[in-house]
Length: 150
Image 1 (spheres, rainbow, N blue to C red):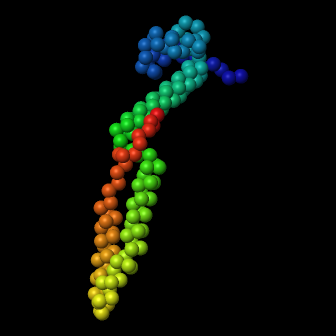
Image 2: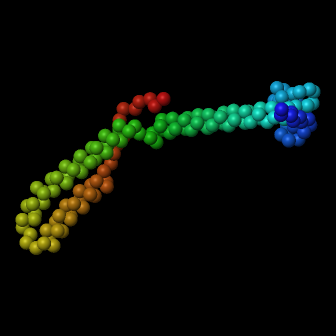
Image 3: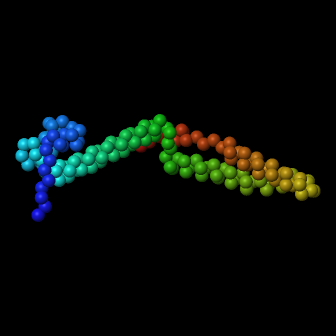
């Protein structure tokens, strides 16, 4: 048989750094008689309260992060995946069109050039122009229809 370990109210006050009244309120279930408590029950109650407190704190933190995220969405700091996907697809389609038109565009210039370095320069300039256009591509997501994110 396991022997009960008892602890006095004053010992709990000094252990948990709380008032006698708080000890009586929090650990009334572990009270054996006035001023004496079952220490094992006190510890179990303490742990369960700490777990609940931690869960409450986590829930509050998640709620806070959710509210911040919703606010940032409303402020336009984020965009819907569909909008970004459409913008990137349009950008890549424009780039592909530019690149596939290079042979037709540059073939006339290349015909007149007889040396390899001249041909390479014409091709490099055409490719660099397409790449520059890609780097300067402006995506406008503000014109998309705004929907609720709630």
